[in-house]
Length: 344
Image (tube, rainbow, N blue to C red; front, side, top):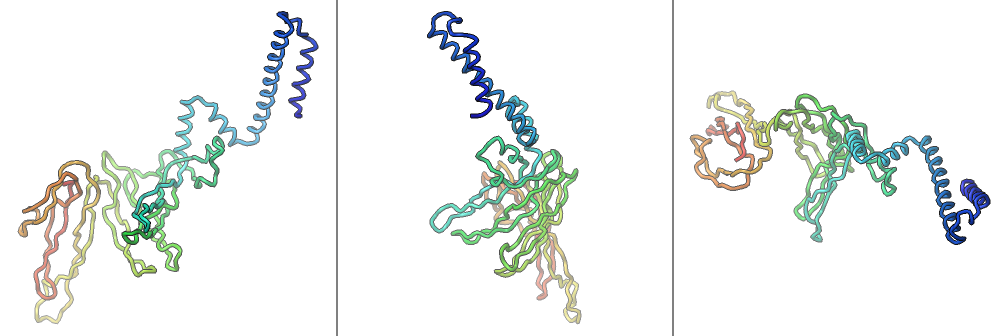
C-alpha cells in the first residue's frame, strides 16, 4: 500500500472516532451512509492532491511533457493558435500516394511520391500514445516567412501494364527563405539509385515571390545526357525562372546548319550554325472554349484555315515566326518558332 493511501485511511479512522454516527441524527443507517460518502469524497481528494504533486515533479523533470500538458489545459481558441504556430515551425516530408497504372493482376499501382509541408506532429506525440517518433519523419526548424521545399529527390522507375513509368520521389525537405524575386534554386535529383550508375544531378527548382496571379515558373531548360543501366537518357535541367501566368512560353533551342551563304563550287564546306529558339507552350488553363488548329496557311502561319473546337481549354501557341535556311543539298527549309502562348 502506498504512503498516500495509508495516510488517507488513517485520517478517515480519526474522523469516525471524533464524529460518531449518531451525531448526524436522522438514524443510524442514514448517518452512516452520509459519513461513508463524505469519507470517500475526502479519500479521492487526497489521492487527487497526491497525483497532482507527482505530476508537478514530472513536469519539472521533462520540459516537453510540460509543454504538452499546457496544450491540453489551454482553451480551445488558444490551443488552435499555438498549434498553428507549431505547424509553421517545422518542415518535414509527408506521404503523398499517386496512382501510376495497373499491375499484372489488375490492381492499381500506387507510389508514395512525397510532399513537403510545414508540420510539427512530433511535438504532439506525447498527447497521443498511438503515435511514435518512428512513425514520423525527422523535422527541421522553419520560420514563418520561409518556404518548405524539396531539397533532394530520386527518380523512381516502376513497372506497370503500360510499361516502365518514371516519377520523381521527394526524399528530403528543407526550409528556404522565400526571396523577393523569382529565381532558380538548386535541387538534387538522384538517378539510377541502387545501381553502379547511381549519380546526382542538380535539376533546379523555381522559387520566389510574384505579384498578382503570376507564379514562379521555369522558362528556359537544357537537356543533359546521363548514362544508365539501360543506355543514355536525357534529363531536363532548369536554367532560368521568371514570374508568369498559368499558360506561358518556354524557351526551346534548335540547332540548324545553314548552307545559304556557301557557293556551290567553293572549297569551303562549313555551314553556318544557327541556334533557333523555337519555343514551346507549357502550363495549364481553366475553363473557356478551345481551338486546335489542324491546317495553317503556309504564307501566314498565324492564320488557321481549319481547326477543331472544344470545351476543354489548353495552353496553345498563338503567334509564330518563320526562320528560313538552306540545307546541304541546296533545298530551302523553314522552321517555325513559337513566340506566344494563350489558353485556346
